[in-house]
Length: 269
Ligand SMILES: Cc1cc2nc3c(=O)[nH]c(=O)nc-3n(C[C@H](O)[C@H](O)[C@H](O)COP(=O)(O)OP(=O)(O)OC[C@H]3O[C@@H](n4cnc5c(N)ncnc54)[C@H](O)[C@@H]3O)c2cc1C
Image (tube, rainbow, N blue to C red):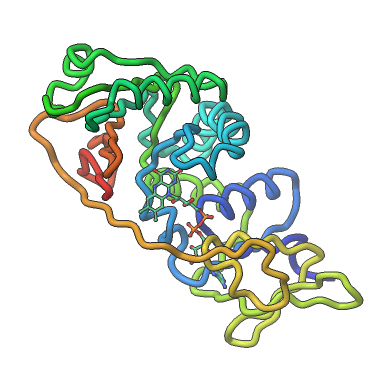
């Protein structure tokens, strides 16, 4: 009899959340991670929880993102409760600044698109935006407010999630690289690791993020690939409370009370 019911490959936010749920259903779960758990994209991210599409290609994902966002308050409460850790979850919303000469028209298009997608984004007069965030530049020509958006300290969340998964019975295997999904008679039977050991299970879930396509034994239906992003952690004189973004980047508030970080904001370009 296999030692586990399910093997999850990849201990990022996605794999850890799946592993936790399966363990809560009473399944014996092995979570394989090639590096330190939680230290890839889930560590690098900014933690914005935004269902708003950032390109036209992401418009079809909006209903899925809205559904996901609506589950977050309960998910966060549960993870904080099981792990005894805080995750820096905040619900103040986001402000987007527009700088182009055509900013007012751009704003109308944005609001119309968002309303059609069921997103209650609002035009935000610039003097109101400055009251909400006194440090924002006076060079913006228009602004929009996304009151429904949230953000989370993703590093605190992944650490809390891993702790919750562990205490719920998930067996975590760090420094364990899955190389190949084993298949017999058209049915998956387990995972062979880079050092040759075999994990047997009836079911295998691939949650290796951008690296998923490199596993042997699966047809890479989605051509995932890693792309580069850059983040800067800043301590500001005047802490911000909203996510602030524009076409060229974003700033995300961090709760300095959440250990182990003393980061007030992160930015990306
Ligand atoms: C700079 C940056 C900013 C971002 N900002 C945001 C944001 O503001 N909001 C947002 O929603 N998203 C953001 N994202 C995206 C978000 O971080 C990812 O969508 C999310 O973390 C993906 O989680 P994951 O578990 O799928 O992937 P990962 O966290 O990458 O986890 C996959 C895990 O699988 C492991 N793995 C890979 N191959 C193997 C193998 N063969 N065997 C065992 N383990 C393996 C990896 O080591 C890794 O730990 C950002 C990403 C980046 C890089």
